[in-house]
Amino acid sequence: MKYISPLSSPVFGRPGPRSLSILGSTGSIGTSALRVVSKNRQSLMVTALAGARNMELLARQAEMFRPKYLGVLTAEKAGELRSLLPSGYAPEIVVGQEGYTALATLPEADLILAAQVGAAGLVPALAAARAGKVLCLANKEALVLAGGLFREACQASGAVVLPVDSEHNALFQAFAGHDGRQASRLILTASGGPFRTWPAERIRAVTPAQALKHPNWSMGAKISIDSATMMNKGLEIIEAVHLYGAAPDEVDVVVHPQSIVHSLVEYEDGSQLAHLGMPDMEIPIGYCLGYPDRLHIGLERLDLARVGTLTFEAPDPDRFPCLRLAREALVAGSGHPVVLNAANEVAVQAFLDGRISFPGIAHLIEEMLAAQPLTSTQGLEDILALDAQTRTRSEAAMERGEW
Ligand SMILES: NC(=O)c1ccc[n+]([C@@H]2O[C@H](COP(=O)([O-])OP(=O)(O)OC[C@H]3O[C@@H](n4cnc5c(N)ncnc54)[C@H](OP(=O)(O)O)[C@@H]3O)[C@@H](O)[C@H]2O)c1
Image (cartoon, rainbow, N blue to C red; front, side, top):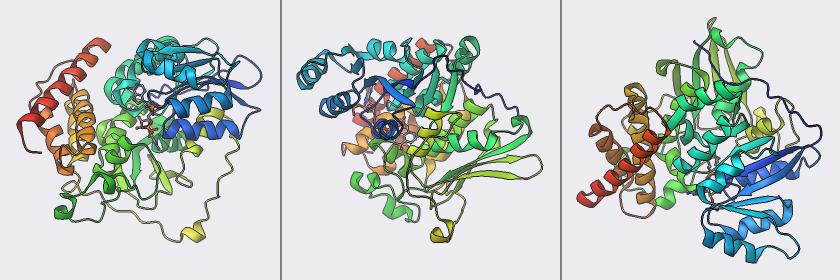
């Protein structure tokens, strides 16, 4: 494998606790990260927190961690937040994409945790990479949209990307101490989601509430639906290709319903090195925030004797077509991963809003990809323009058809 990960040992200049800027602190990853900070106050502190719309939670987090900076989506939200903060505490509140970008490039932040959901997280995360930051990246969509730009940015600025996504974090740990060029295959594990054993007819009628109920992981709404369609694993194949320089056919997926083995690196001699642990995002988040040291996480330990059985099976591309669509988009290249991601984000929201059926998600994405000519997306502006166009086209297609 042509292992070309941008990862390298980040150098932390200042002694004392590392300061964190957390984009998406009000989400599932953000709140897990703050739990890790709470348990490691001697080594981690919070300089900036950013949410989007949930001001009550952001105010509670701000009161507890007292960051110097807060970020929100709109000026109206900033006013709401200000009114919720305790008297005598007056952090600087920044607004919108520009504000998030400022928090992603703060000179006083040692680590940037990019945990906003969807394409909205791209611009600030890329700004962090361009500013040479140590970027703990949960926002997989940013890599799907602009993996090439991240690689260029890391090479030019010396930025480091530490993968928070549990599978990519597992791969990172399985690469440690080994020559990545001797890896022959990356094997991503997938839980299979809540409908792993359901026949196609039953999957056709699933409701948002059923799809949101992931068997093993507690996550935000968008990634929970992505796990149910297995688009999440498709996005992760693309993420792995960009992070580790693998070819598309060097990344495989195996379904592992217990979510104990988090992924494997196979080496040329046939050895497969796996990472095992309880399915809790505090573990990979803590690994990134403490890297290269290991932090105190304090979760229940994995007891393999109690787990008893670990099982593995091949994914079913017929019942879960999103996995195939993601692979096809990756191989087609050009703007196809951008179209895949944008159509998926629109379709997932439409499904959650009761506007389309569960299989409608894959149908809409397939239609958007089929109608997309191969165009090259050179830079960030091209990517953002194609993302916006696809969203408009997806909305129009939903207006026209029965999904
Ligand atoms: N959850 C997991 O276990 C997990 C695992 C691996 C990777 N990831 C990835 O991590 C990212 C976050 O996932 P999550 O599950 O934590 O999502 P989530 O719970 O939905 O949280 C999303 C965060 O993004 C903020 N946000 C929403 N819309 C925004 C916008 N337009 N601009 C800026 N910020 C916005 C939200 O703010 P408000 O809530 O204040 O509106 C919230 O802080 C995703 O890319 C996901 O794929 C998640």
